[in-house]
Length: 260
Image 1 (spheres, rainbow, N blue to C red):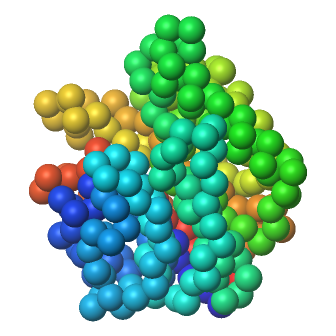
Image 2 (cartoon, rainbow, N blue to C red; image 1 turned 45 degrees about the vertical axis):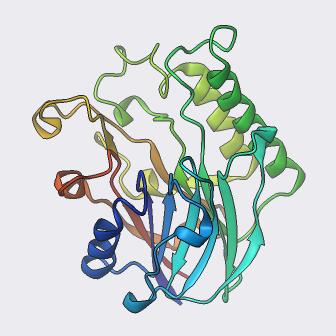
Image 3 (tube, rainbow, N blue to C red; image 1 turned 90 degrees about the horizontal axis):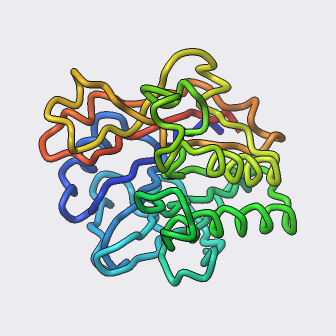
């Protein structure tokens, strides 16, 4: 079975319902994982008219929220409250072929990369540590993990490696914590396995007057697969043009196709 999966931090699914509909119509992934839905589950728009009648989600009024929309049947597996934050940041579901999809929204971590001065940064590190411990305790198999992980791990995942080493999302301690979680689950970075060289971004700040010309991006959004199925992934792509749609999210969709 071949299927295409997309992940996208939508930054309010109700506000950007039209953009989701456009993506589902133009790109038609079989599965779309959304983060930062910013609404309770019962207020997530209905996309069944476009063929996405299967939904597994965790919601929260005004903040966070993750949802898996699918053309393919899904069985809910559950969700973890990593770091006991009480946030809707993880949900998982199983496809009919047995593949489990994890949709994760890692905390952004605030502006100061020091947990002593910034509780949010500490929460981010704790979230990643609990992810690591969970994958050690329950090693995933035939699984895909996607989402806004809020870390650009490689030097070519940011517009200026040296300039961002002390900026939240690219600090060495964050990269180390993300790598530890990745290694614990034997996760393969599908995007970089497909596109090993060159700069790749999936997020551009709203602060830039001309995001496209400045091009000061970061690759914060990821698709991982466990090592037993990673070789089945191909056709990875990042839809940069979506950042130029009307009233866009600051993130764009990341896609990959799996032959399983």
